Figure 1 (cartoon, one colour):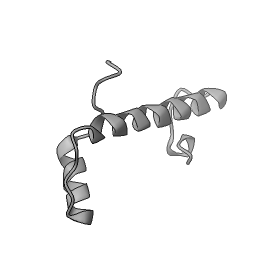
Figure 2 (spheres, one colour):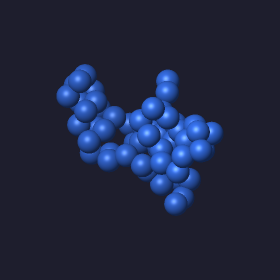
Figure 3 (cartoon, rainbow, N blue to C red):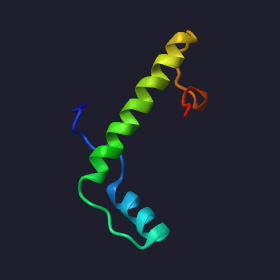
Figure 4 (cartoon, one colour):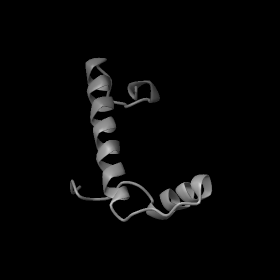
Length: 63
């Protein structure tokens, strides 16, 4: 998987932002959100590995 690949459904993201704020979404938002998702996933993977699991769970995602 490419580091540049968008990991979110752009139409859903745009719909959510519009429904919550009546604002448009710039084309640069989806790649930025994907970077954040990758970072969170990498942290969750590390947490699962630390616990000796091969399954990433919701508890591995912390803020």
